[in-house]
Image (cartoon, one colour):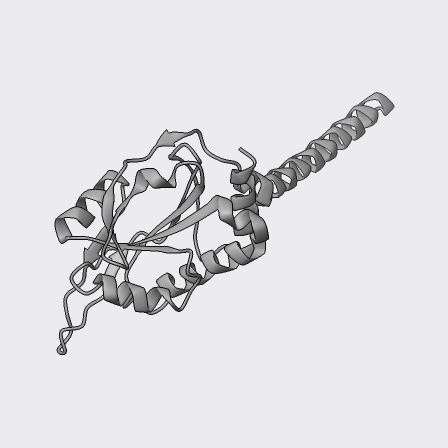
Length: 206
């Protein structure tokens, strides 16, 4: 093999090594971006949410339009839920505590997808386990179904056991809604608590 051929071969190997290194750096950079809390918390394009009127824990009508002017955290669940719902409501409680005075600019909302069991009295007792600023809502089965459909929320009552107890399969995400009543982002209980807090804080700056 000539010196020229040897030189060309060396350059080819060098270029290949540089290309491989750049590819690795590109993948690593992509992973950093997709896992960055700031990127994951960036609000999505604004999309109007459907207004609704349901019943609060005191039996009074609650109009979602009263949420305007505050960032709303809207979650659909049920009080007999063994894990997802209490964990999510505790996350909401922790967010309010972490925000301090800015918590007055946020309104968490819990909407029951089990209205047959979740009466206002039940919601009042259940809500007492968490921050009292969380709005606890229920309604007739038809009212709840209409709100869930308008918000694109899935839920399904599962077959009861021998004692008549049943679970409800449902969407586990919390909807982040801006001051104008527009959907901007989500979070769920699987996320790191600081990431959740950062998402809410980001909403407050918009």
